[in-house]
Amino acid sequence: MEPHKLFLTILIIPLIIFHTSTPCAAANSKLFREYIGAMFKDVKFSDEPTNPNVDFHFILSFAIDYDGLNSPSPTNGKFNIFWDSTNLSPSHVSSIKSKHPNIKVAVSLGGYTVGSEFAYFKPFSIHSWVSNAVTSLTSIIKTYGLDGIDIDYEHFQADPETFAECIGLLIKTLKKSKVISFASIAPYADDEVQRQYIALWKKYGNIIDYVNFQFYAYDKGTTIPQFLSYFNNQSSNYVGGKVLASFQSDLSRGLTPEHGFFTACKMLKSQEKLHGIFVWCADDSKANGFIHEKQSQEILATH
Ligand SMILES: *[C@@H]1O[C@H](CO)[C@@H](O)[C@H](O)[C@H]1NC(C)=O
Image (cartoon, rainbow, N blue to C red; front, top):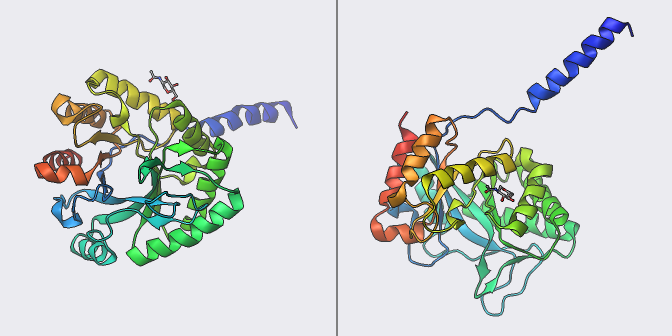
């Protein structure tokens, strides 16, 4: 190779690599998401106000690969329904989606507890877990007419490589067969939880659409500057990810609407970093008429 061509090659390749690996362009979105159905408080999709100018995701909570509430045992990827399926049934899903074309419905996997015990991610092997999960979830998703999955395991009896491979292959397979059109993860600031989810993100972040980071798992009394610094830190942990802002509607933890959550969201919006807002959870919000959900959706809907 002639010297000047070699020089150009050396110059151009890093430019291309640098350019294509720049974290995906910052941009606001109108995505509003809310978990629903974990607490059996009779909440229905139709109880919640829906602004027609947002993209709205209900996230059914939870499907768990455990066998029941009485002395529950893990089932190695065979998922069962643990949300309030009386009030949130297949016909409720089809009815809310037909009335509101901006609504999609997802299912969250895992959760903090099953019955009164921790719900563990505990696969027997990668292959068997993925195979069971694909089969059982495909059936649930088709029966209920769902659009996506959310990953919310919070306790682990497996190493991060196993978690990354199982969840990555599950998402990849369900997307390839067009059973789902989107997937999200729901980590929070805990060393072991972050170790697991960051390993997943490093290998499969390109097929994960949203990061439902549980900012409400930070202390009660979180201030606006603290919230913004947590947000920036997590955006760098999940590089290129659409990290969503979040609050807990019983107002027990994190930065709450009363203490400046919406101010923080507007600041993120002015920096083109508001990829959406999600709330835990509709079951609790029903009591106050979803006032903070209305406010969240207004912020997302307006320019
Ligand atoms: C940022 O995130 C990392 C990884 O979870 C954590 O170890 C660190 O303490 C965080 N820093 C701040 C300032 O929150």
